[in-house]
Image (cartoon, rainbow, N blue to C red; front, side, top):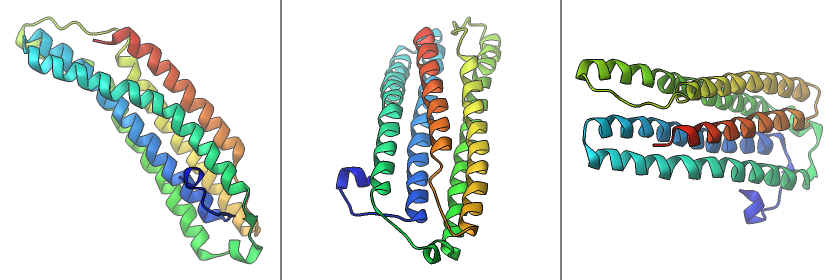
Length: 217
């Protein structure tokens, strides 16, 4: 993070796009941690019902160690992204000839693919979470054991899916606008898209936090 290292910078498109890819990776990692924590919470319920106290305790602790720190870090990482963005904008502008460059287009493609990977990953994780209760219900029937499951758990998978779709849409719009600007020989960071994505991301994180409190083991 340049904000922490106080590195010199310029308003170079590839620098902006590298920043996007870096923080998309952070957000993806954090939401994978949250999703893993949610699955761990359900496994804790399963093993508790099966009287495997050690495993139930392990997955309960895993849920606590993964979910709440990841939720808190979403806000911290969001703040750091804005700080790094402001740091880049303090740098010197670059000439138009440095913007109309094949490497800029390739960087735009890599950034778009980062949005796509993040979106697909979140959608896939959402389906896993959404279907996990169904799996436990079927397992409960097979084992003739009643499993107590939180009513709000299944809705969390839908939230992950919606966030993944949001990534795909915003990533696509961002790519189209970036290519258009580069074709014109100029580049301006898409603050509106960043702001919109940030509001959606933080809102979803707050909703998840409330839902997790309701179904915590």
